[in-house]
Image (cartoon, rainbow, N blue to C red; front, top):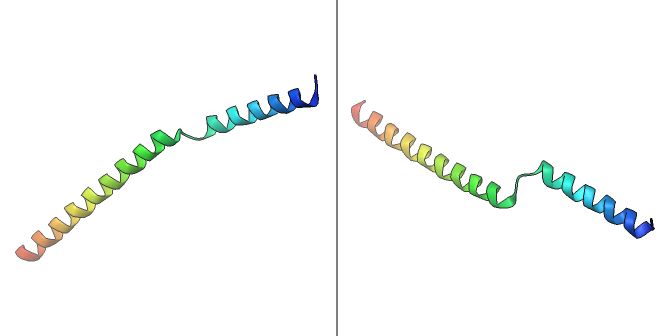
Amino acid sequence: MSMAGIFRIFLLVTCVQYLGRIPSPIFSTKLNMLQKMEEEEEFDNNEEEEIDNNKTG
């Protein structure tokens, strides 16, 4: 086996291991968008509660 063949196998194994450790970028961007939307909803809900508390208090 030549040096190029060994390098290709090493590169393949490294890439497969790396892909196994991280989620796919498409999936992670969707999750980030969902988390941001949830945080914005929570922020809006907290603002509404504070306004209601100020009116009643």
